[in-house]
Each structure stands twice: as structure tokens, then as C-alpha cells.
Image (cartoon, rainbow, N blue to C red; front, side):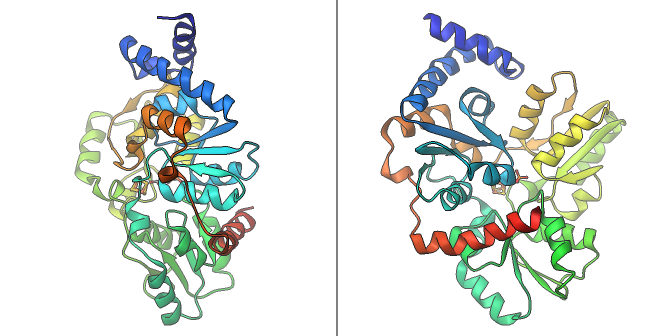
Length: 336
Ligand code: 13P
Ligand code: SF4
């Protein structure tokens, strides 16, 4: 093993990767991260990663890590020629919309999202026609075309605030496409579904499948555990947890509390990241993998950075960028 790889293993250990990997895995990871970090400098590239990404991607090669809102707000000021987005396609599209003059690449072009697949621009046009008085509030997990027909974009960390502001001036709001998040928001804001809030039939394939009975079983075993769930979970899950929020809300909650143990009802990447961020806290595993988020690996990041393949580049027309940008800018204004 050469000196560079040895030093890289030490760096990765300091970052907390030993909490989730064994020694042999660290060597393989270090060989790849050394090469990726070298190429990143050479090509003046920056790597962004969503918190659901594999820990070696987050801790080994990423410059910016966060939830959907943080990644969109931080990526506006990026000073690099190339952005490599380790996440899913709608996130990389958002990075392109906010950085039209930079080249944006995704390591896996097949990384979709069941929510963004659930709705097309024609559906939004039809909803607008049916409810002409209602603004369209769209979860960020959507294609650029859908954003272009929306009034404002929200993420899980600002949806409640933005909707509550909008309800001051509007009796009815169309919230798309996540029906579970919509129901959770309608409940928090005390709004009637089908009348004050119009929903779409979209859902996240990861968060819709958690089981209340399993949470109850774990609670018996760990009575002082704090259970947190992502707001994409169905309401019966939310009714049985202690905290609901975005991925960054959950990390903040762990930081600011001292429960005996924590359970994160969300994608497994968040729990793995939490283990490295809070090594003294205890986490009880109950999570599901997002098949799309897990399509990104160190191997395909390296391949992307090396060859900048045209298949992996996010290409959006100038017109689409301008039209979808308006609803994203509106989010920044209303979330302030
Ligand atoms: P966050 O914005 O909370 O990170 O959520 C993104 C997502 O895709 C959750 O499934
Ligand atoms: Fe989409 Fe769900 Fe995966 Fe998030 S976890 S990217 S909402 S499929």
C-alpha cells in the first residue's frame, strides 16, 4: 500500500468511517477517494451529496452535503467549472437550473425518484384548469418541466412555513405530488383535504412501506427511545413517532436532545451518517434503502469525473431553466 493511500485511510478514519466499515473495506475506499479527490482538483470540480448517499461518498469525496433545501441554496454560489451531483436526477436538475453556466453531471443517469415519476406537466396543466383560483405548490422531488408549471417549490424543511404563509391569502392550495406529505401538512395546518388542499396521488416507495406494528414492537424493547420519521411517511406512522421532519430537521433534533437512543424512520443513509456525526449516541436500526440514491458509488463517480460522459450530463433548454427557476426563486423568497 502506498503512502498516499495509508494517509487517506487515516483521514477517513478521523471522519468516522470506521464506525461503519472494516479495515479491508477502508483500503479499497481509500484507493478510489485518493483518485477522485485528485481529479476533482485537476478539473476544478465540486461534488455535492445528499445525506442519503453512501457514507464513503459523503465522507470521502463530497464538498457540500445536505438535505434538498441546503443543497439547492448552497449550490447557487458555487465557484467551480463542473458540478458532480451525488443524489437523484431531480436534485441534479435543480443544481443545473441554479447554475446554468456550469456543467452538471450525475454519476448514475438512471437515478430517478418515485415521486418525480408520478406527475407530468400535463397533469399540472389539468389541475390548474380545474382549480384556477389555487396556487400550485410543488415538492422539490419533481422534474424541471413540472416545476416550470408551478408557482412555488417547497422542500420537506420549509413546506409548512411556506404553505402557512400562502394560506393567509389563498383559501385553496394545490399541493403536488406527495399525498402523504400533503396529508401530514394538512393535519398540522388544520386544512381540509379535497377542499382547502388538493392533493396528487404520488408517494415515495421508501417511506410509504414502514410498518407501525414494528415501531411499536421496538418501543417495547427500548421504552426511552426517541422515534423520528420523515414527513414523506404516511400519517399512521407520523401519529406513532415523537418527531416529524426533513432529514436535516432530524439531524438537528439528535444534536439538540439527549435521548437514551434514537430510531430514524427513513432511508438508511441518514442513520449511517448520524452514527458518524454522533458517535456517542445510540441508534436503533429501522430503515429502508432507496434504490435510486444507492445507484451512486465511488466507482461511477470516478468514471464520471474521468470521462465526463455526455449521457451523464444534465442538459436543460434555456427556456426550461428560466421558467422553472421562477418557482425555485419564489421558494427562496418565501422561506426567508
Ligand atoms: P430531504 O429534503 O428531507 O433531504 O428529503 C429528500 C428526499 O428525497 C427524501 O426522501
Ligand atoms: Fe425519491 Fe423516496 Fe428515494 Fe427520496 S427516498 S429520492 S423521495 S424514492
